[in-house]
Every structure is written in structure tokens, then in C-alpha cells.
Amino acid sequence: MIDLARPWRECRVVSFDLETTGTDVENDRIIEVGVAIFEGGEVVERWQQLVDPEIEVPEIVTQVTGIKTSDVAGQPVLASVVETMLGYLGQGVLLAYNHEFDTRLLASELRRIGREFELPPCLDPFPFVYEHFREKQVTRNAQLGTICEHLEIPLDAAHRADHDAEAAGRVMFELPNHIVLPDGLGDLLQIQRVLLRQVTEKFNRFRRGREGARNTLGAVDEIIIELGAAYIYGDEADPVRALFSRVPDVRDLG
Image 1 (cartoon, helix red, strand yellow):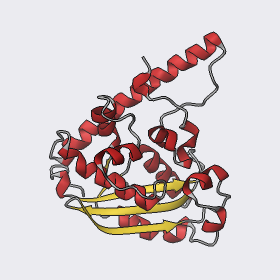
Image 2 (image 1 turned 90 degrees about the vertical axis):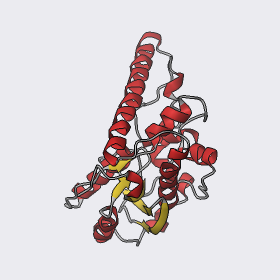
Image 3 (image 1 turned 45 degrees about the vertical axis):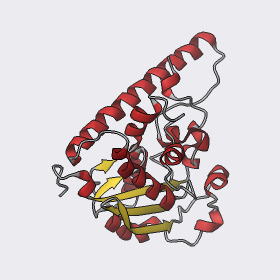
Image 4 (image 1 turned 60 degrees about the horizontal axis):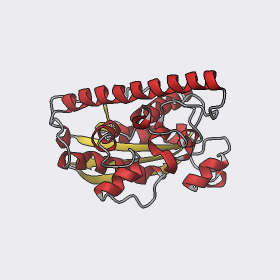
């Protein structure tokens, strides 16, 4: 049981990231899992595992992550490593950058292999980065790579799960040195939900406006737009987010 009254920086935080075959949270597959466990803001344990998705890895995924079908062929399938993975994820408060993509895809994958697991609360640096850095034009966007560069956090192998997981965790623990955040885990999660809802609403307004312009003018570039993990990464889109790499930042919509 997670104690929501506990100071979040005192919690054991399990930062994780997934590399996958695409952006469809219901049908795409995990090809890599990365975990970085933090205590007191420092990494105390890491875990990384390539996973055989039992389907081809799309070329666009290989181009960005460097992970090829031949790299994952013969690796353990998800069902054979799921207990190890959940053992790590169940050790504390989860954290992921734009967590909704990762947690939804993870839940789908667990259902596919018949494994039930109740995900604990998940921290997410993204809405705080967007609100306090992108919105105030401190950074040009809210991409993980951009905020890592701004905060001088190493990210030497972006788009690999273990490196992205560690970088996301380091961003979360660095944020209180730059912005005011509540101490309590429950309070932080509540503010996070509000900020993420605001970002989603802005994006949805943009999408409706873009659809209206397409219907009226018939000349708008045909790009499928939805809020997902890809949106954060922009021009440095992770392959699972590549579909959204051309989407402009919602701050510039009006």
C-alpha cells in the first residue's frame, strides 16, 4: 500500500520506460523494458531487458532506437520475464515521462498474456515541465531530451528504455530545485492530474480546430493527431511516438 501522505522524495521511486513496436496501445508490443529505482533522489538499482515481441520490428523503430528484429529474436518473450518486471515495478511509486502511454500499453500487454497487476500511483514530470518550462518559454518544448539538456542531466542514449527511465527520474527529483512542488505524494499526484488534464484540453481544442480547418479549406496536411507519448518527443520522436513528430506544440495554437 502506497502512503499518499508520505513526502514523495522519501519514497522508493521506480522510474520505467518501454520501447515498443508502435503507438497502438492495444496492439503494439514491448521490445525493451528499462527500470531505474531511486531512493533519496539517487539510483540504487537498474534493470534492462530486451523482449521478443514475436512480430517484426518496424524499420522506423530501428532507425531511432537501433533495435532490430534480429536483436530481439531469441530474447525472452514478455510472459517469461513478466514476474521479474512486475517485481521491479511493484517496489514503489512508479514514474514515467508522459506515463499514460506507457501504463496503458503495459496494461494491454499484461491482459494479452493473462497477467493481472494493479499499477501503483505513477509520477510524471511531463505536465510540470510543460507548465513551468515550455509555457513560460524557458525551453523551446517539453521533450525529455530538451529538459535534460536544460537541467544538465545526462541522456547519452536517448530512446533506449533504461537511459530514458533514469533520465526521467532524475528530471523529477531535480524539479524542486527550480519550481515549487508540494512535499506530499498525494498532493503532488493531484496537481499532476490537474496539469495533465489542462494540457489534454488544450490539445483537444487544437485538434478540433485543425479538423474544422481541414473540413473548411480542404488543404490542411493530413496528419493523424492524438495525445500520446510521441507528442512530447517532437522532432526527436521515439519510434513509438514517430506518428506525432510533426505535431506543433499546443502552446502555439492560438
